[in-house]
Structure formats: structure tokens, C-alpha cells
Image (cartoon, rainbow, N blue to C red; front, side):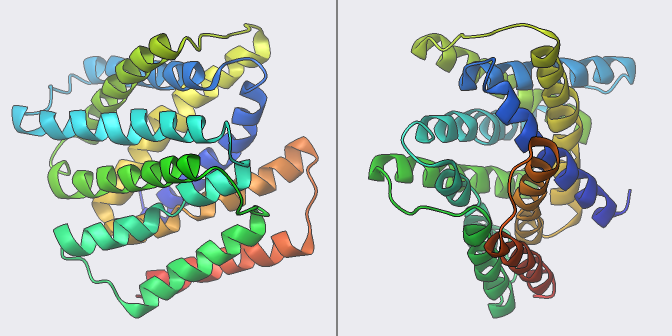
Length: 279
């Protein structure tokens, strides 16, 4: 699959998931839903590895599979959900999507990727557009702000670890076992905090199905594919298109409003992505 086609599909899947997650919040506690999402995604991919007879990853990959599963899957989701208890959704999302900054820095240090002025300018332009798009209120509890930032940093570290240590692993097996690790950690965390709320009906089951099959199993394989075939920093910067798709999906499917500032924000996000890709 061409890289930019994979990127487009990923942004559509994760962007529309903003709508699905909003609907799912009416039926599930956040961490329990995240556990359901990744356990169902892992189950789907593990079945595929059996059908396709994909062997287990080599033992040299397992420490990094455990690390990326615990960071990108478990910690990132748990930290973001916890920070949302005291932060506005716009600020939490904005902090989460500072991830490309940390990827660019870590990729420069550990992967020897070029950190050009154009790439940094593209990140800054996209993040300024994201601030307009999400109507960010910068006030909030500092412990929650630091927690949300830590989620972005840990997500970034997981991406750089994948690029540097796991690209020789089969992508389906890699994603399956990352999600298995993440789901186990999230299950333990959910048991500790006692967040098991669930209301089962046709719509809530559809939310779990979309998240497990499409937003997790398919989308995370696409993400691994992008990390493998692009510079880690450029793949990370491209992910800033996801919130744009998410906002547009909310306008189309949930009847949310579109303002001039949001429109300008979208243009700035895409302009920054284009600028960074040329860096």
C-alpha cells in the first residue's frame, strides 16, 4: 500500500473515532472501554496470526513489544483519561498532540533523523492551528497538565522505540502482542480504580466493534506501517490531521458547529504538515 494512502486511511479511521468515543462515553467508563477496545483488537489480530500461521516474534523483540504495549497502548490511554477528569477536552487533546515535538527530539537523538528548521516550523504551525481548531482553554490543574504531557512523551518514546527496535518484526504479530500487553495492563489498572461501568445495547456493541476492529486492529497496523516506511518524526507530524478529521466528523455526524477560527485552524494544521514533510 502506498504510504500516503495508508496515512489517509489511518486519519479517517482515527478521526471518525472521535465521534465513536463521544458516543461510547454514554455507555462505558473510559478505562474499561479502552481495555475492551484493545483486548478485542488483540483477539482479532491473534486469530489472524493463527490463520496465516505467523510465528511468534523473535525473543529479541519481546522487551520492546512489552515496552511499546505498556506505553503507547496502556499508559497513554490511562493518563489521558485521568487528565480529562480535570482538564477541558480541547486542552487535553492539544497536550496529547504535542507528541510530534517529542518524537522529533527523540528521533534526532536516537535515530539520527534530521531536525530541520522547516520541520520545527511545520510542527509549530500545525499546533497553533490545532489550538484554534479545538478552542483550547489553557487553564487547568497543573498535575493534570503534566500528566497529559507525559502521555504525549511516552507515546513519542514508544514510536521511536518501534522505529529503532521493532521494524524487523512482522507488523501483524507486533501489533497483536502490543495490544495484548496494553489490554492486560489496562485491565489491571481498571480493576484497581474500579471503573467497570458498562451498558450493553446495539449502539454500545457497535462502538466496541468499531474500536476493536477498525480503530485498533486495522489502524495500529497502518500506524506501524507508516513508522516503518516514513521518518518517525514525519509520521508523527502527519498524525496531526487526525483531530481535523475528528472535528469534521463531529460537525457531520453530531451536528457540532463550525466557526471561522476552526476553519482557519484546519488550514494551518494542513499547511504545517505540508511544510514539515518538506523538511
